[in-house]
Length: 271
Ligand SMILES: [Zn+2]
Image 1 (cartoon, rainbow, N blue to C red):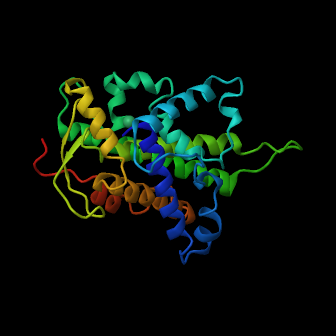
Image 2: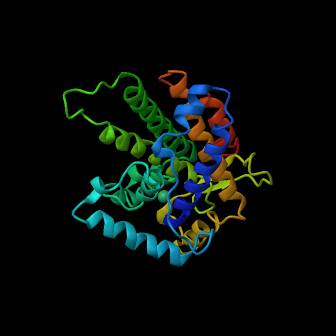
Image 3: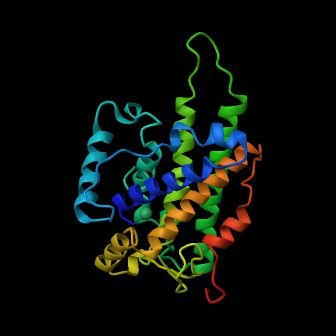
């Protein structure tokens, strides 16, 4: 997906997550987790809900200008769309940007190493990354919500820790969303966005026609694309799983295997 695509998908997922969250029967989730500032949407004006060249270019300029400003990251408040911004930033931030070309970086975009990895290897590697970052988010948030104690008069704010937690979840969401782009994976054909096809192939970026990859990335983040709709549902589901795990004080993601099976299942045809 493109940068503006990741931003739009994440915003839609946050909307879906919050609306479902507000109906939760668990009081802790409803009162606390739904209202975490990091689950606020990014208020940024778009010309269109579809991913497109203009929004994508503007976003690159916007983020780069911010990164280069003297305030840098400290300028951004967690509540002001920080999560969506961070999901986008996986494509722009150093050192991850070098990962685009390096073998180790492919999992961040749900793609396969150029150096002879099988589809199964690539699938395992990307899933381990998504799971690990989910666990990192859960543990950080448990620390912040349950065991962090303010020390001294200045208080030792949790802002830094919260930002770090957002960065973990952002990496997980980015790779999860990319797994739905036909430029990144081949899934078995499907018609219900809630029941996506299994992953049959994971592509190697180096071997692709970059123009076609790019077009797929735009298409798969456009609102009437089935892939975009799956990416939104899957992202909202991951947020829910995170909220649920913290509310149950579980160090491990509650319902992970069902999540993986639903959104990231490997086809028996994959090698
Ligand atoms: Zn990516």
